[in-house]
Length: 606
Image (cartoon, rainbow, N blue to C red; front, top):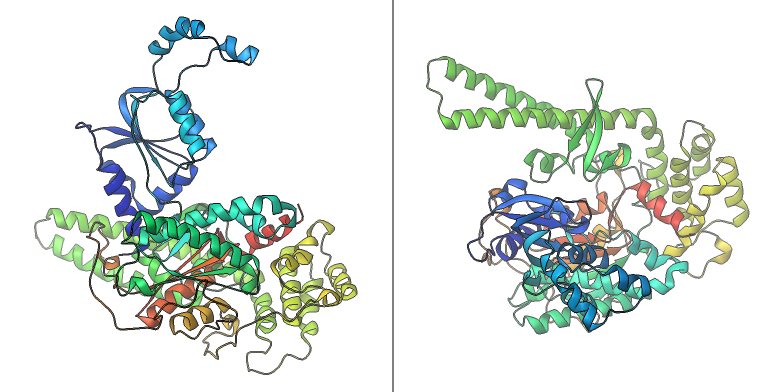
């Protein structure tokens, strides 16, 4: 069962099915984080089947529904708990607030009637926190809300977003700044605690108690890994069965900082999903493109089989497959029309099939428009950049020959007004990474030649905060890089393979360098690949049967502090498919596009 299905099942069984006293209709109240978590794993109709008639945002104005009980799914944070207290808490006395002290017992008595008469937002509350609620917040709740209104209060240990079947996000972009920004050192410990707790809830959901490894080249990682181990030990103490089983016991958690690979977040990736998020405007997985001259919003959803088929394909293959699927659709539609016009009676199943076909055609049309917009962007500006980017990343050209005069290829692009400052910065950063730093004077000349605005120049120099050498006069040592595997490539503009793929493959083959990726407390008894066990621990609940047949295999959980790219996400699926003996799950503080990565770098100066 996939990560999304596991979370969906847990939400349904532990929250939505937990009806009390025969209650049927209920309200679901969420905050920003829990809404994203629920939306990632459940459809609205699945929630409605469990008696939820409305979904409301706790931070927005809501009409009182005194006759309904409310199911709250919230993060245990002040921003979410305060509105909950407002929904059910006693009204504060203005006289007391004005003078800043507690009213006396006599005044309490005088105002008691008002307190009893005050109507609450809902009839009662069933409160589910995404993770354990701090004692201070729990005390505040019970201090201000009568126990008769709180029918349930639990934590469900789902403090992460199941972004895809093998991808999770902590939805914590600020973690990048807390981890790498020297101006935010005071917030680092709290951020590590928060992230570690979120990762521990992921492991608890998966039922694994993994061996913890970390990239030793950044000393911060060992501290973070130790905090994660401490959190895992607490969950293990609460549930001794966590991690039981021959396959689960071999699972690993690999903690990696963004300094492992500075190239992948900078390149123009030419697979469909990565292109859509890099080149087209998007928000909350809704991409905008032009369709028949008008702006069209396209939701990219993993529940759609077409998207799963297309997302990791090269854009050229995407067009071929969309064309092939359209032809298949037309043939099927014509055959169905013939059978219906021949006098056959239309059954309910026929009508359902027609509806599905229309949905299929519309979605295929949307993906076609999305791909066309990506291709237009590529042809208008990206194609000229890709060759230089790939040569810089690989150190050799498409024929495998060493690039001797890369500046000759870079100069026209850096001087061209039609190339955006951000694209020029990406090229300059790739050049710096290829040289493991350049002189300060030459960097100044490069930025001036490329007309990089002064306000954006810190993006380049801030790369040092991730552990990379930018100015070679400041070089502290050689940047470690694994021995890159020789791989065959089909497209000249897509020769680069993210370093994380080599790391994933070496980890599951038990070949990962233990000097640079040590175990926190010694290696487990066995981490090598074994045969596949076909037992299934969980039942079936989701309609998408294609996702139900996950084999019982050990899991490699890769967590990148500071953002995971779509090319790295693709690697998790590729390694899982190639291995067939491990499932690789990749996660991060947040999912990043190149634009987001540059924005994060710029903020390191703030």
